[in-house]
Length: 232
Image 1 (cartoon, helix red, strand yellow):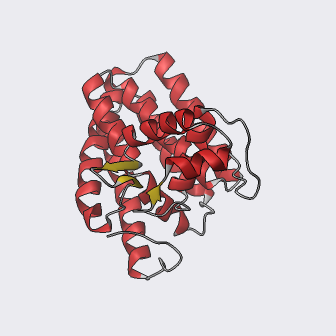
Image 2: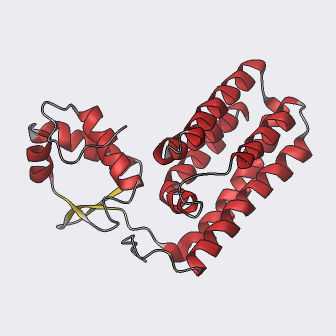
């Protein structure tokens, strides 16, 4: 969604308010730890508090916002010190669902995975960072769905959602213009899943996580976070 913070939107419903706020949280325009006030948002969007409250509830359910007792709702902290734990969990889960997808996938699953990859490819070509974040999530969820295990899918989806702001910083390490050859990482995983090559699918999933981890750590080490208010 294209954000326009200069023009006050009138008559927005809960879905549109949710999408605007989600994009602002993922873009780190709403800073980690920042207070989110219902009354202010209602004035901003020209609506009653009801659709604002509905949008905030959905964002809380996606772990992008947090409700604190007696303090209201804030943007969920982005805890950089937890990244090693996060990436360990992501690696294990990503390897598991990708391996299972190679074993269990259907032709319908493959069609969906390829469609989500095409969405991602188009966002990369347009340097659409928020689009890349969301389409990357949808690509990996399509793989998890092909694994045919609802428990793994739910856990993996939560990990992907929790990591979307980490991914925002990962894309920033490329100056928000992802090298097109990195699209091939996804293509390789698709080919392995299509061939039902479980070992290769797992190895590629692991390499995919490692590349993100190493790039992210190198970015942090370069001290390039001055323009982000990141809570740790």
